[in-house]
Amino acid sequence: MPSLFTSHSQDYNFTNTGQIGDTIGGTMGPFVGIAAAMLTFLAFWVQFKANEQQKMDLNDQKDRSNLENFQNTFFELIKLHKENINELSYDKSNGVTIVRTENRRVFRAIINEFVLCYNEVKHFSDSINPDDYLHEEYKKELSNIILKKNISVDIIDLVKIDIAYSVIFFGFGNQAESVLLDRFGKKYKKEYFEKLLLFLKLKPKAEETAFEVWKVIRNYNNEKLKLLIDELHIIKNDKSYDGKISQMGNKILASNIKRFYYDGHQHRLGHYFRHLFQSFNFLDQTNSDYLSDDRKYFYGKIFRAQFSTYEQTLLFINSLSTLGMKWEFKFPNDKNFNNHTRGLITKYNLIANLPGNNLAGIVFKNYYPEVKYENDDQ
Image (cartoon, rainbow, N blue to C red):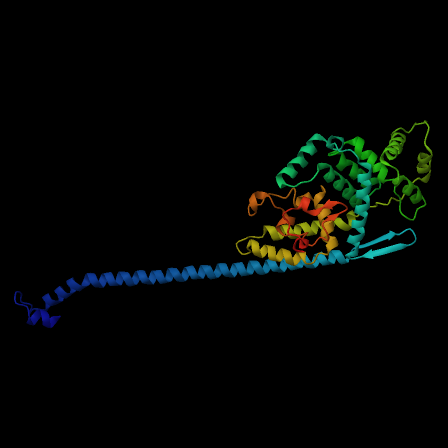
């Protein structure tokens, strides 16, 4: 550049080097400034990208930490679930001796009791008119549930299931019976459930001599059974009753049953179902930023794999009663799933391994049509 300016210029004299410096500085300065600005921008851009990457790394680290904490808690919940099962035991007479049932086999014994109680409730409840069973407000509530869930079931069937399960859950006794009366009084007609409970209370422990009387009563046709229960209901509510009492009525009054067949399982099942529901609610409400819905379902399958078929059957029954409707029929709104239409049982297919297609005539698919049952592939 100096040679060019000093030796080859014809119009200007650049022999004074000061002028050369001014020319070069004035000419090249803007380009140098632009280059410097670009390099400065590039430096800031690299730093910005580095900061962004650092944020992503920190978020990834946070997600990994959150996932690790979730997994620790989740598998601890499974461990507690197993411990709850291992602590279960149930002593019951078979009419000859006392038989102890432990661990998962307890669920089978409870289900057998439910089936017996459910059939007895059905035997007593012969009306096909929901108004004979339900208060109007509760009838509307059940109708809304059936409509919202789009299930093909009869309201009366839900009533029978709820009553039978509530009886085996709470059982009979002074305090337990008062709980049943309070719960049923808010939903069912007094004239119906008081007589039904009176009928079920006639069933004593299998080892008692009064059990033979029960077997006779249980084989009564519905009309004859209603007459007997009406008689006992009058005697119970009128302490001064001095009218004629039937021969069977006298036998029942003389038996003075103290130990009822349905003595309740609240102390066995209460904490079991509370823990189970809280475990799946914890899984379902976990932040989806680091645990996708597919991963939630994967972990749900891990938990479900711990269930025996009897546990799944009891969960099915529990979820149809007012004690367990929060599993599905009254599940809180969840923005992540189909406009609030699916509860925990359907989301995680918790009863997918139920044996057969029904329990005592209660068809599984009628209540949970969206569950993918194992038998569907057979």
